[in-house]
Length: 236
Image 1 (cartoon, helix red, strand yellow):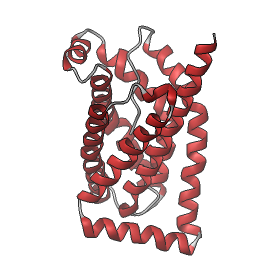
Image 2 (cartoon, one colour; image 1 turned 60 degrees about the horizontal axis):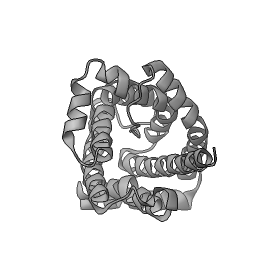
Image 3 (cartoon, helix red, strand yellow; image 1 turned 60 degrees about the vertical axis):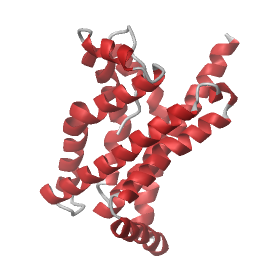
Image 4 (cartoon, rainbow, N blue to C red; image 1 turned 180 degrees about the horizontal axis):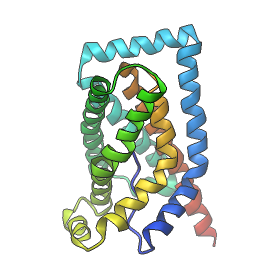
């Protein structure tokens, strides 16, 4: 899973390198966070019991669980955070928050289905081969073909004031994928490739809750960096 950025006139390689540099700090912090969660599950009995309760709740509620949790962690919490910041408050609106909430609710069901399909096709164990295969299929098949393009389209639509015409015009322009999607895909690999490896190290029932936490943490880190970048730009 990724966080889209706006289209740029710079070359895809330069855009990707710029994004990778921007994501380096948040990525390292995020990896420490994800590693801590995995260690807590396998090394701390009380933490494992709590995680197992979450997994059991997912099985009881069904698909509604990933839809609600992903909407909360992917849209609602980040939106509330951005609304609380004076530098980003004016860019938030009820329509934007509702649109992103519905989008991430659907994504939650989609990602949960992906994790369950991979468990059925590849295996549900946490062996190195199983984790590596799942991470490869996730980051190099699912993301470039569907996850990143769909996320880019959604956020481009939101940034265009919920108007599809500018988005469709961008897509119809030659070189759209390399210009708008590829930089996002490349720049986020350094963050999400290690993250999904850690996600697939957990039991299937806990993979989506782990992804939700990583997604929320990553979004908040990027929002904080954006706020700092604007503050510096305003002083120049």
